[in-house]
Length: 159
Image 1 (cartoon, one colour):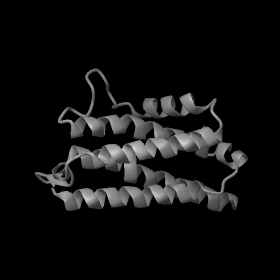
Image 2 (cartoon, rainbow, N blue to C red):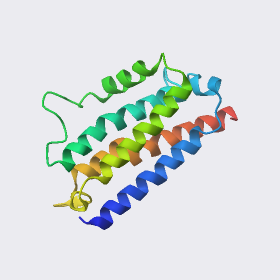
Image 3 (cartoon, one colour):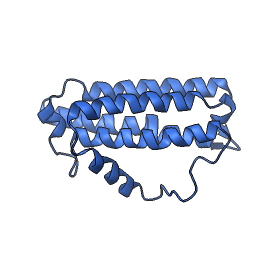
Image 4 (cartoon, helix red, strand yellow):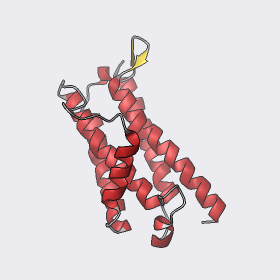
């Protein structure tokens, strides 16, 4: 655990965010809202990504403050319910608003991750630290997952 681990984590976070942005860039409103991923389109996927970034930015800020990452009484165990909540809340918003919200939530997420000491990254006792697990689940790993899905869909659709 070191500043090198933190730097590597933040670099990976940025690389995968850029990859997801590139997967979304160039899609028009009809393409962003077309349903193809269950009952979601790209707009819903991005709203869900932004929702997790907002939630986990709080967790990262709490880690930086030396607190438990999850507030008392909150349970993230039912990820599907949270996913649906994030996508449903964004449904009435237009795609430009969703994309702007995502860029802002990402900036806040990165700021929160940056505020954590370097010794809170990497592994401890052979297991990823909480900060590293959060960045994987709601950050770079999450971006990788959805970028790949969107890129495959674009390829299939020729868009």
